[in-house]
Image (cartoon, rainbow over all chains, first blue to last red; front, side):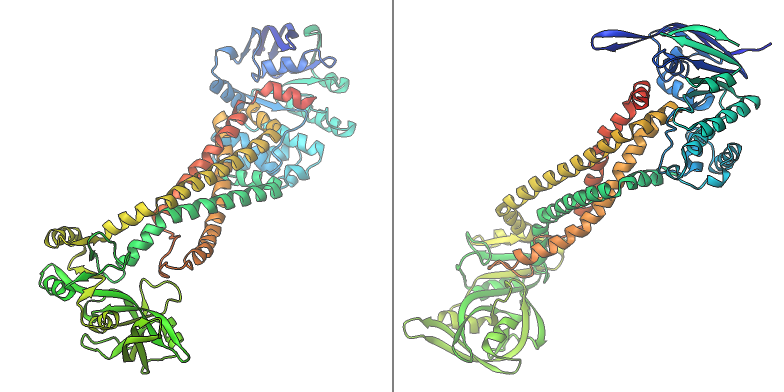
Length: 227
Length: 397
C-alpha cells in the first residue's frame, strides 16, 4: 500500500493586479505518493509554477489546504515552515541561483550548515552528493566557473543535502540546451529510481514524458492527469 | 565556510564599489576620530602641560589667570617663605614674566624673560649646559631660539637690557650674564626667544630695582591627591590672591574653548551620519542586486535570522575595515592639523589640539561599529522581508 506524502486540496490563488484580481489557481487538488515522479505540465500562465510554490510552502493559497507528511502547512508559523522546507523538501529552480562567491561544495553544504550539521559531516556529504551528480572534480570551483548544466547539477545536489522527503523542481531545464537538459532528465530518472519523490514543473514534453504521472494544467485548473 | 568568510566574499564580488565605499567610510571615520581627539584633546593636553613638572597649584594676582595679564603680585618672597613652611607643600617658586632685550651681533633683539627660583621652578627642562644655582645672579638660561638670535652658546656672555627707552634706544638696566645652559620652556610658543635668570635679576631688569614682584607662584603638593584640599586651604589663607588647582584651570580653559567642543560634536555627528548613509546605501544596492539569491536561500529553508545576520556581518566588515583605515588616516590628519594649529602665535609649542586617548578613541570606535551595524538594519530588513514567491516570479520573467 502506498501513502500520500503530499495532499493538496482545492487550491485557489488570486493576485491583485491593477485593482483587479488575477486568478492564478482556480481549485487545484493533487495527491503525491511516496516514491512518485510527477510532472506538472502546461502552457505559460497556466498556474503550474504557482501550484508548485503553494505545495512547497513558499507561498500561501487564497483558499484550500496543503498537507505534507501529515502536517498542514497553514498551521505552521513562518519559522516552522522555513524549517520544514529546509529539512523535508528540496528545491531546484530554473535559474539555479547558486551563490556565485561560494564553491560548488560550499553551495551544497549551505542547507546542511543551516540545519546545524557538523562541518566534517556536511563536507563528506557534500562531496558524496557532488559525486552522485558526477561533479566531484568540480567541488572546489566557484559557481561562476561552472557551465549551466553543471550549475543545475550542483543545485540538485544542494536540494538533496538534507535528504528531503520531496524534491520540487521548477522548469529545471528551462535555461539549458537540449543536450544538457537530457543530462538533467536522466539525473532525475536516477534520483527517482533511488527512491526520491519528485514533482517537476515543466513545459518540456520530453521531461514530462519521463515522469510516472503527468498533470496538465490550463487556466489555473488541472485538466488532465494521466499515468 | 563561516559567516564572516561568506560576507567578505560577498563584498568582494564588486571590488571597486566596495573599495570606494570603504574609502568613503574611512574618510568619514577619520573625521570622527579627529573630532573625538579634538573634543577632549585640548583639555588633556592643557592638563598634561600644567602638571608636566609636578606643580598642581598656581597663585596669581586677584582677578587674573596665570600669565593672562601683565598684573603682578607684591611681596613674592614673603609669600614663598610662608608657603615653604607649610608641611603639605613639597616645593614652591615664584615666576616673573616680562619683556626685555638682548644685544645680538647686529642689534637689540626682543626677548621674553622669566625670573625664576631654581629651587622651585616648574617651567623648563635643561637641554644643554647646567642649571642656575639659586644664588647665581650672573647666569642666564636661553631657549634655543634666543641663543640663535643672540648668537650665543653655553659659556658665552650675553648682555640683557631692561626698561628700554624707545626714544634713545638705550636701557636703564644693562646686565652682562653668562650663559649657563640651554633649556626648553614649557609654555613657550614655537620659536619663542626666551631667557631665564634668578628672580632678583629679572626683577631688576624689569623694574630697575629690587621690587619684590612676581607674575605667579607655583606650588607642588607633597601628594597629588591632597592638591585640591591644599588649594582650598591656600584660598582661605591668601584671600588677596587667586588660587587655582589644575582642575580649576582646566575648567576655565574648557569654558573658553566650548566652541571647539561644540564644533567637534557637530562635525563628529555629521561624519557618523555620513558613514551610516554610505554603508546603508551600499548594502541596500547590494541586497537588491542579490534579491534572487536571497529569496532562493529563503525558499530552500534558510531562516530570516541567517539572512539578517549575513547582511549585518557585511555591514560590520565594512565598518571595521573602513574604521581601521579611518583611524590610521585620522591619526595622520590629526598630526598634520596639529602642526598647523600649534604654529599659531601665542600657543605653547608643547600644546596639542588632537590627543589620541585610548578611552575616547575606543568609545568612538564602539560608536562607529554600532552605527555601522545599525546601518545594516534597513538592508537586512529588505533582505529578510523580500516576498519569496513574488520575487521568484519576477526573476523568472
